[in-house]
Length: 528
Image (cartoon, rainbow, N blue to C red):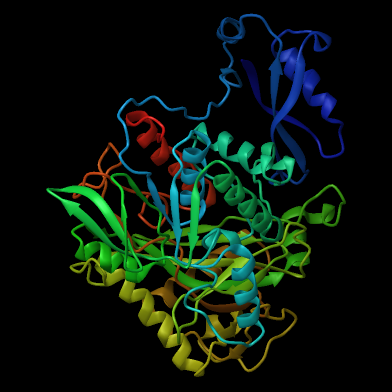
């Protein structure tokens, strides 16, 4: 058990020991008689002078909870250690549980089940990360596109090519379990303390592989190139599934299919699973020189060796609609993220070093069922698809439409780039986003960019680039589940993660995966 002391501010170049002394002083404890460690650390560049902001854990204190209550300060609290879920159920399983999808949600669900003796069967429609990487690189070099193995489909899910950002707004204690699991499988140890942790696409792929190997070592099975094609039920209860025509008996199924498994959504709907359309966002990727973002965020301190590449989060709301930055990648690149032929989709990623010339982020506008005729469950999915196909038709190829921000704001086509060069690997075609994105999205993006330019100097600079479209911000569909996490239409099926509409990003998806696996463990004993 520990005492957590929050909001300790020290100068950028100060020794961490100064934060430890401050934490002990707030608790009236001698530093030499406790163990102090950094729990979280961030930077605050908002006040002209950059400071480190730390939370410190103090251990080795008798009756920590009583002490925290006596101190009675808002920045001092008692903290229990995060605990990984353990089996508590007693019902026997007739068959091994099945997990569909090996993105963050499915990976963590399967790993927890395997660690506790449930020997899960895992199905992934795409390739293992090694083969997936080769297919992606071949496409980026101008080779054939694979609908089976791409940025969206394959081991690690879409998160494997997204920089490995782990920041989340959820405050679930299972977040710590996720972080410690990632470190145990090769992620950098500093993700345990950074307020905005990231792994990097290059390292994350090895972490994913290590977790998969652990699942197999612990008695689980992982089947690649195996898509869910049907569900077998009797009297409203799951009895099995079809995977590429093969029948697998099971009474517990975790559906972690990801937000881009469009054909699977249709099949599941045909099988009777209750679904509903949900809001998401669309827009484009914006690129700036990372050095320009550093200067705008850090001022004269830009370039200081203690400072990481600068990040940002921006939002603007008007007329009941939000325009905001999403998935910011410092020192990163824009990537080709389509999952269907003859479409164009963008995303962003960074390697661990984040040492690329450009910074990129999505600038997106919220859309809801009222924008795409929500009378159909699949209307949002078709809305995405129309945009992606329009982008392909605009160029007649997988090259992405690209427009300078100055031209975008004046609604005129671009002919070339300026000081910022595009990083999209398949190549771009300069022109306009008009005709690709809906007019209301373009209008809100223009208004948002002007506002963002007042918040970050140079954000709306003429030479910044917009490459689009960005359409896969979150799932356009929610597979409805009850408070017990089971599908409201079929006992034994647990919709899980971002694709089912219950997470947004790697961390929240992984936490939902742990929670869904825990639901099975609460009722059923390990598989005999």
